Amino acid sequence: MVDITESSAIDAAVGVLVGVIYHIQTIRHQKKVRQTDLTLRVWQATCTEEMVRSWHRLLSAEYDDLADFTKKARAKNQRQKSLIGTATEDKLGIQE
Image (tube, rainbow, N blue to C red; front, side):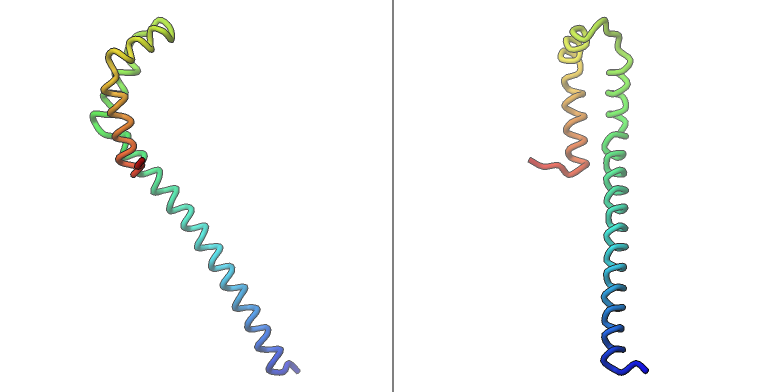
């Protein structure tokens, strides 16, 4: 027969095991929640109407080479680049 000390030791071990398993599941769930939250925040930051228009303007422009792209991007799209960076940082909660 199993006496009381052996029984309580087994109960304690089972309790610790259940606690560890619960903690591991909670950590995995929190990881998924954080990933989902980040994905949604990035999506919200990049899917504003002004952001889509700026992105479309950037992609639809004609460029000859990298130097031409750099020159045109600096001249015309400085505001759009600033808008993209600021909007993304604000929505994602990035602070200096």
